[in-house]
Amino acid sequence: MVSNENFSIGQSSIPTEKLTVNGNILLANRTNSYLISYASLSETFSGASTILGNNVVAGSTTNTVKKIRSIADAGSFVSLNYYHGITFHTAVNGDLNTEQPVENSEKMRITQSGNVGIGTANPTEKLAVNGKIRAKEIKVEASNWPDYVFEEGYKVGTLEALESYIKANKHLPEMPAAKEIETNGLVLGEVVKLQQKKIEELTLHLIEKDKELRKEKDKNKSLDDRVTKIEELMKKNTTISN
Image (cartoon, rainbow, N blue to C red; front, top):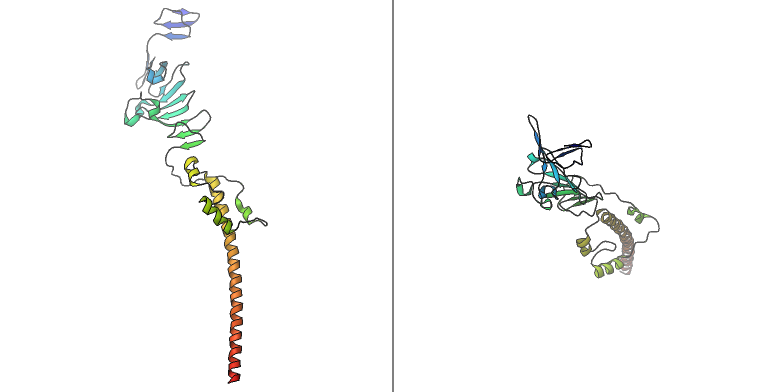
């Protein structure tokens, strides 16, 4: 049927699109074939029309999910979803059936906000990984590096005060406690900066203690010299008396 320059095949009603086909369409050449068909609910998430081929699966404009997949890749595919963003899937447990629930096969997603999740469907950071990471180098940007500890006028607390704090809190001042890290995780850049601050403060304590030890050493040497002189005088007096 032709109506208002719209064409339809296999239906008697007036077509509303440029081309409407009531049935399947097979596009084929010598090496590849592509089927345009009505997909199952599990394939499109809403039962809308889809294009199934060797490389592409796409839903209709009424479907919130678009897919790109490789059939030869054991059901692996990429899903473009209005609500979930972009999700990457592989076959479940080596199963070649591509109609597995998405949540069971999802391996990575990019949310609408730009967060990336690997092994998690709810990344709250720019990159969230539910698992181990192996890298040759990790660079963490940091500001206000604590070299100010060595500036003139910086006050370092006494070791006595530090001891009292540790006994009361079971961790160093400013450093997060074990329970806080277990609950909220560890902010690597901030913790490294705090550790550097504690190292520099400890260095100042060591320098101060070294000065005190040197003073004690000089004082002891002075006392030793005085004792030696007294002993020599006593020997002389003893000799004269005899």
